[in-house]
Image (tube, rainbow, N blue to C red):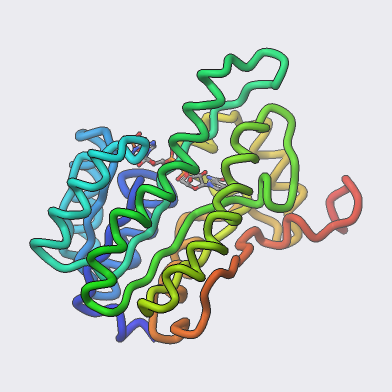
Length: 256
Ligand code: NAP
């Protein structure tokens, strides 16, 4: 299955940390050329080192996914130098704030970073993938919004559910060009951003997961590799939940 990823050019937004870094390492190990697109240069340099250590070929390009000019210029640069086969639109933020206390600017920041960015990535990839007659796009959504609610994350949930609505129409518009677009819905994945929510949160969440542990970036990477591979060439507009069974229990108690 992974044979088909050899030599492919993939952009991973938010590839400098967490899930995106795990995805970048996995693509690099499968023989793809990885472009990590994120804002922070120091984290980007560290990520390049980590991916190279794993034996991959990789570059970092500074990019703010909430800014159209930035996304367009990075995608054009990659396409010009290496072609563009796969986009993992993964960058996102999840600051916690209740509706009562939320300033409208906080809402806009999350929607711009998580949802508008998906539109930007697809729009920027489209001319290049259309020209080469094929392409794969994988969005990182979440269980929060599409399936569950969570106090303090109304803006985040709206952005993540919005990604799926966008994806379904995008799938129809991209299909004639042999471009697929699918979404991964992670549960609680142990990353720097999740660690920021505190040990108490991590402990409690871990206890509710039927498979008995929080997820790891590699768990999401497995689904991304599949969706980008030839094995998934007839799948588009779909979502895969990768959550260790987290959303399955009917009650609040963790299963025995
Ligand atoms: P993370 O560890 O904080 O990593 C986020 C990545 O996105 C970093 O590389 C960050 O780099 C980049 N980023 C953030 N805003 C950006 C922007 N405006 N432009 C470009 N890059 C940006 O977060 P994570 O936990 O891996 O989350 C990654 C994705 O998975 C997000 O979409 C998140 O919603 C989703 N997700 C995570 C979980 C979880 O449990 N961890 C669960 C469900 C869904 P810079 O800040 O340097 O730009």
